[in-house]
Length: 595
Image (cartoon, rainbow, N blue to C red):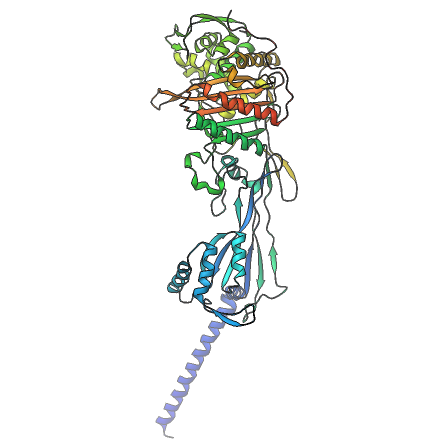
């Protein structure tokens, strides 16, 4: 071999060796990358390809009434998927043992009515999935199917359908207490009412089961399961009586419609415990079908309404006068039906009458704004303001319910000449229904305020009962002052213009009406439109329950007399339902209206 040929051969050998070394170097670098640099990622990726998992759904807790009647619970619903790659004809065996082919068209016709679709819609879901991805292995066929629908689908024995169970909220009593219970989103988020308020007790935590699957057959490997268990939610027990709640909702709907009112409410509370037994409204909402209700009525009107309480708060003025020692039920003032006061304020009563010398009891019976204004002059503004605060006005929420309003009470030193007087008869500030009920609970309970409650307890999944936090009871007025007020309010119910309409046979009751003007948003009041109310307790000689009725803008009867039929029905039903023993039917002492 000549020198040139030898050199050429050596070059070829060197080039070949270099190429081999480069290739080997590439393999080495790749091996280092796989086994060292990105080892964890590759192990994780390999593990994920050989691991399956499924969600273990926790069950949201139930909401029950005071007797344990279920008002909200979770049931299982099913999402259904379909594997487009497996869709096709199916070989079947008939009951007589003959083989036959069930076409995709036939399957679609069987599936469709169960899930509420047409056969064409079912086939379109599959076609659209294949168009979007020819290799698609899953498409959503239906969501939120009931157990009956799931059972019917599974009975078809269609191998390419898959089922994902999901808990869903249901309210077995429909609209009963619906505005209080609230509702969830379609994703299970608590959005309103008790569902939202008590979510920390009710919420569940989902678990997970992971397992290994065979690399070639995709079958779960026995014994490879690792389970993180789900945790169910707790049980919320309310103070509500669902039977009483149902009755009050039916009754107030009927009465509101009879009076052509925009809306109406009823609240019933236990005098001794502060437990709210009913908080009903019209219009109401069925949380099983939230969208069917106007958004304005999806929340609670009982907790979300503010208004000038009007004449119902004349009793609070009387309480402050008696407690401060400047008046008794028989203290007289002289008042006409309209007066202009020395400070320039001009005030009138809702009805015409001659100048009369009222007793304090008579001023409540006749509901005289002018007389109450004269009584109000017996105390300075700061003292009366302080008494309104003591009775809960301007002090914030009573129960803490989501959306509960506070009411507004301006500082006493901002009151003008008119407000100086209007605050004596429930104008110039706003209150809520729970605030008014709480004030009357205090009077009925011999002067001791027991905070109103709607939630009794939370029972955790392990059975531990956690009582709801409750503020301490507090004496607001003396027992003797409370006794004077109880007797005066009993006389109001016995002697007022609505006495016959609210009478409950076998019982003596104590009540006060309120006809509050409605603001027009421009510093004045709407003409001829009122927020009417009546609040009271019974039996008057041993108070057990406070009942409050409201009607917003009744048009058949525009005064507080519009609430009389509802009060009579509500109070009668409460006393009979709770088997309160009948007693006296009229006051032991009939107080005179006039001197």
